[in-house]
Length: 290
Image (cartoon, rainbow, N blue to C red; front, side, top):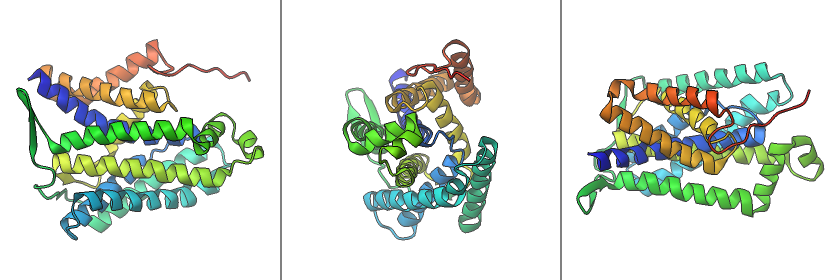
């Protein structure tokens, strides 16, 4: 039973990782918490659902097309709701973010309805047996996607010119712009990448639970926010490991204490962390002189 719960924790933690990394990317470049990320995650899951259930495209094509469509949606959101307010006060930007999330969620409900929609049951339904325990292909796909994404993003951020530009923007936007970094293009690219990651997570969790609903992004995005904080906001590797740790806490707590407190465990961890290590498990607390 313990091994089963550890596998379940890795599976759910992989989803938190994918969403949390997207979260932390946007914060790193824009310095803005994207509360619309949950609605974008939901849209990605619905794109994949439509491609699979209506167009019968197969898993791989649906997965990739959902990421592309959601990346385009992410760029539209950035252009419409974020870019016009880039010089506005922080409270105006936060209101815009919340408004965008509500609008997107309602559009999803209008297009696909308010009732949960079932994913086809035969997608990645086969199982793999290793020794004395068994796990499904979807569980393997979720963990492999999270691990592969972390490696690719690490190489992108720390081994490419684009990554250097992203890190420069995270330190000082104006100086990066003076050094020749195209801030507008970088913002768009970061939103597209973050949205694509959210779509991959939404698709995988939809197949895992065999269901999508218009409000499925709310709980996940809050947990992704916790992942971003506990990992040290702006820290990709930290977000990866924090997502997996959070999944383990949730899974083991639900199995050995009570499933009714599944969400409460996450917030207890967040409160304790903010009290004793506010910079996050893998981050550093920074101070600004005024």
